[in-house]
Length: 375
Image (cartoon, rainbow, N blue to C red; front, side):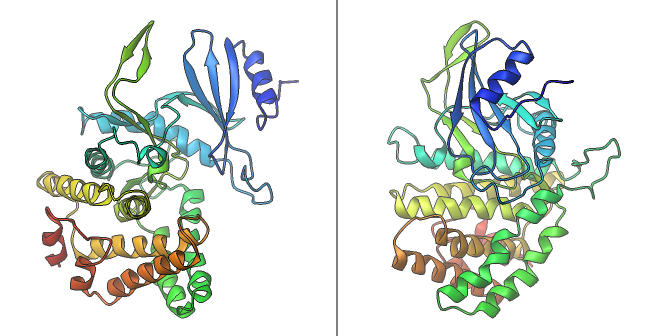
């Protein structure tokens, strides 16, 4: 019989690696992943890698079933995207985590170790230039969206731009599905939440502009600061700031607006509650500027329709997620829900002046005024 192991435990992964004759000295479980089982493995040469296992349920809630084939899409994205991105953006300190290996049967992915700090936890580090980091991420995300308009996600040999990651498409509507309940809980119109879900949440199933990361937020950006060391063949060398994008299992073809809005929403929360260091505005300005520059190469022209989608997704995120991920006290959360609802209403009513002055777009400049005026 073929060897099988319980990859939800350190002992199980050790047994699996031993069965494959992998030389390693240590296996350590990592916290922070809600869906999957994560491990840092130290190899015999002291290099570390990350192993990620998807079970048919969520790590933090075994009663919640989730199709483990989501890991097939992550593995495919990590193998495919570096080449696609390198043709569009050769000089950057931002990149997807490097793919090492994948066991499709066991849903076990091995990737490079991008470090132990993510941007959410590193945000308050005074040595980290937050505006510059936001600019780097905005430029990189624009490149991802621009160069993947014709990139398929088919897992089969049949190449089709219509094929998508059904797990990601379904999961991404979670906040839209829950908006109605949250609004009712905080004395807002449940019917308005249902309207947002019906009108905009429904679009997530058919959006097909480009490849989207699907869970692009500071927690999925690993940060190695200048002066840190990494292994380069047999020599430890100092590196500059390195930003590694992880957790690609929700990758899908969709609208670029959702990636932009999700990061901008989480950046707003970090700026609001952890020191106002300007991550949101720097990210938004660099993204829009990069996309504007690519229009000469045939990129999709951004305008009011796209801005509206950004505003809607930002409003849904800010109204919904702080009710389950604690940022502040009950009254502070109520204020965030009201803020999200305000942006949603401005977007639905197409009150462009109100949107320009909202917390989403406060302090942005560059080409954004032009986007607001485009039909």
